[in-house]
Amino acid sequence: MKNRTRRAGQYMLQLLTDIWDVFAIEIRSIFTDGGVMLIFFLASLLYPLIFAAIYKNEQVRHLPVAVVDESHSEASRRFAHKIDATPEVNVDYKCCTLSEAKRLMEDRKIYGIFYFPRDYGTRVAQMQTARVCLYCDMSSFLYYRSVYSAASAVLVSEMRDIQIDRYAMAGITGERAEDMVAPVGYDDVKLYSPAGGFTSFLVPALLVLVVHQTLFLGISILFGTKREDREMVERIPRHLRRHHIHRVALGRSIAYLLIYIPLCAIDLVLLPRLFGLPHIGRIGDLVLFLLPFLLATIYFCMTIGAFVRERDTGVICCLFFSVVLIFLSGAIWPHCNMPRFWHYFSYLFPSTPGIQGFIGLNSMGAPLKAVQAFYQVLWVQTGAYFLTTCASLRIAGYIHDRRNQQATMEQNHRPPTTIR
Image (cartoon, rainbow, N blue to C red; front, side, top):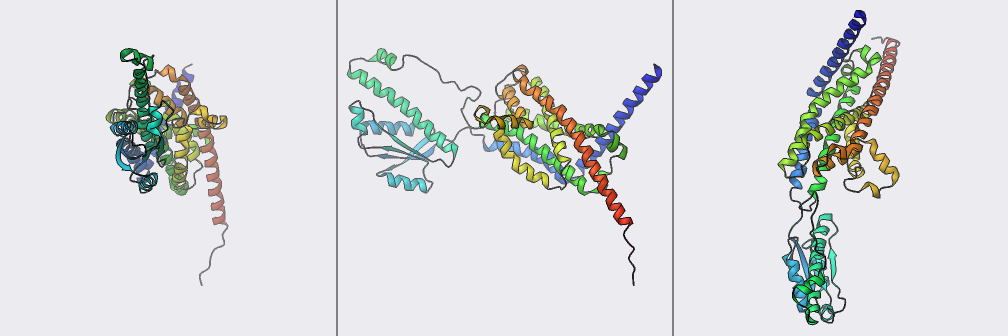
């Protein structure tokens, strides 16, 4: 029994020693590589600051628009006055013809056109269906959204006023007319985005993606450098690379994890509070959720990075996948509208459950049980990618040793050169 306990103690001591050695080597590699330091410590903090600062204003306000009023009626003037009173747009131009307004839009002086045909006032007065034409600049979703929101709000208000006027002509006035126009009252409450803006739903997803992509880029650069630099690879003892590859994976992952824990605290906890983003989640739940997200991301990046042969390869992959991952996450385009293949394919990446779970916890204030499915997926990914990391490191190490042996044999069998 004592011998068994002693062997177990020696095994644990050796295990911790090996993990510490790999951890120390990896930390030294990180802090001696200027590119990796730039990605880990500058890019991971600078990008979230830039995103939060750029999208700080939730909505685009006071967009210039033009009004083309061929009706010249009281109804059209009232509609145009209400449009100008909305916070989304300003009526900066009143044009005589539609072609004049189109030229202003082509010159980027306006972002919307409200056109009232000649019969607008007559049809409203005769209680017939009237038509208002709206032309929007579709070069930006935010321009279209602001102009269309203003038009929708004024249209609802104008329809209400027209109905009240018609009831007044029929002798129905006061509260009775109000009740007939709107028999059911309602309040428009925008859940989890009080301003109804672009920032509240997009920036939290971008913050999580920045953590995912900077980890991928930094680890890819590290692994590519080790493949290029033979001496750097051989810093890890040969017996660990041959017989205890899991200790190599654990040591490296602990190094990345300890670096990214404070970075995640700044990006995903401090910045939403600093810039007024939704942040109604519990800190304890966020910590418990982000732990498997970081581990799954680290092992995913190590699995891919083991086959990166050049330092610049990770940059190309990162640029290609960044836009793809934000769409696959379901934050911009819902999963229910995706083909089933892409829905399931998106869960190969830790960013998908990470973004969905973080938005549920931090933006919606859900408890950890409400995002249990994403939480479990992250732990499954952690285990699966740990195994693939061990396998990929073993394969990459085997390929590296074979190439070194071939290079050594070729050098030994090379005929000596004679100098005349």
